[in-house]
Image 1 (cartoon, rainbow, N blue to C red):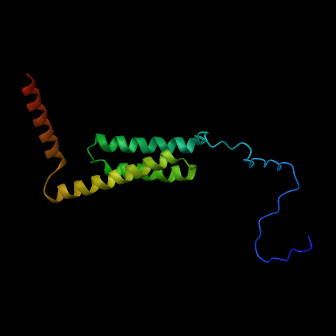
Image 2: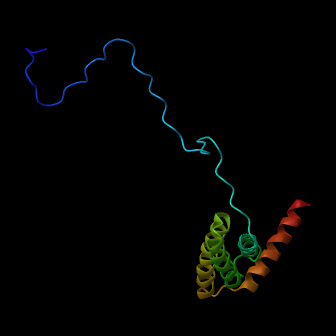
Image 3: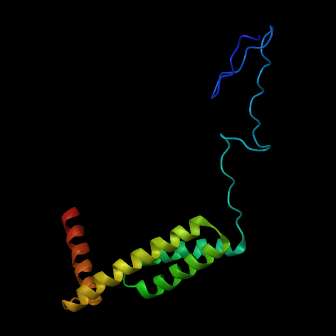
Length: 139
């Protein structure tokens, strides 16, 4: 084709000389990788189990003591948090943070109640009176 002048810049590719273009293979996915598979479960090591148990005990103890046991619960929660991080066990870390947050809230509430003159013994007395009044109304 002698009459063609050279053109500079981008040009689309020239069509092949007949036939159909070769099929393009699909892109390869990494071996052993499935988009719909569940993420692998974390391995439960003894350290991870200990951290999870400490975190659960901390939260339960804080609830059952109505927040009075916040010093012990904060120590247990901190232990659960640090051990969970070391074991790379997310549930233990989450329980540790929940326990630390709840213990902090309990400490603030009890400090405020103490500053206003309210004691744990008064709470116990009030709860006993409330329980008796509920029993009497149920009869």
